[in-house]
Length: 370
Image 1 (cartoon, rainbow, N blue to C red):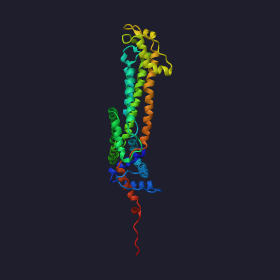
Image 2: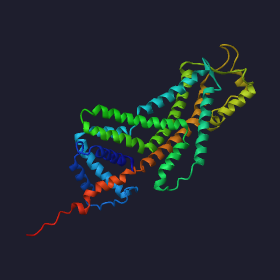
Image 3: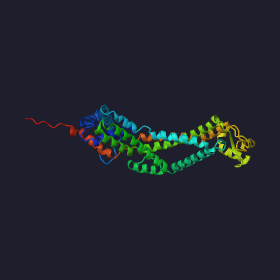
Image 4: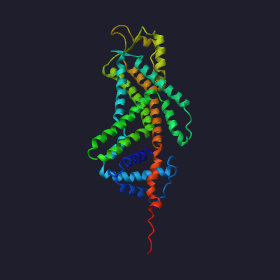
């Protein structure tokens, strides 16, 4: 079931299960919404309550939930804020993105007052991302096939997918889910004085969505990590540019680390791919030697060329792969949001909703003739 439809059904289901007396959502409204959802259409079959429901049943429940939500909004407009809180980005997104940028910007100052042309913060960032790429590729190659799983196998496949995630990604997915639930709880607490009968249903919805929405929380956490890595690379580029163009720091290297020939070889290894793709030349060995620091303030040269090479290398090894990863993760998020698994309890819920609509329940008793 699609995310929006499933959230609507979950919310209505939670209210009906906790509001047995019809204080928040009247019994007559529930019956009328069922008749509207069934109008002009054949009723879905309510079979074994333990079996998963089919597409016709899901669409019927979604139409009924939309009809009930339209009535509920008139008395309790806050339900839309609850549904939005379950979907939109949280403060956690902004905090991690800002942290990524600040971290990338800050590590560029590890060189001190002079820009080292070997850009050790860049090397650390590139190596970390290469390790991540290799790990993702190994996990992708080692994951089982995705061919049309049976409905009963979905929970096991979800658990296996979670187990393949690293510790940090699992922790972030749980944190993401907890923040969404806490945000809904805050809305409930804020509005409980205005509509106390609705609060138990909203709390149950928050708990149900916490379980049902886990595949989406996992994909959002993955995308957030990729975006944070991109912001770290952007922060690193901005940090070096700030040092070179604003602070006017010179670029050079410590002659005690390499000789001119080996320094040139190391620089070609680091910047060669970016240099070849974008046509930014790496200076020859004798020019590299002229950039060596010979004292506390002697040596070095203009940083412009090296700032370009640093930026292009970060673009090649971090930004472009992460952009592709964000696209893939976003497509996966869209796919999962369009095919969420319905809870097992929906089969029994469907049977209870259809019971008043069955012909046996609707037919009036035969009148006796005198």
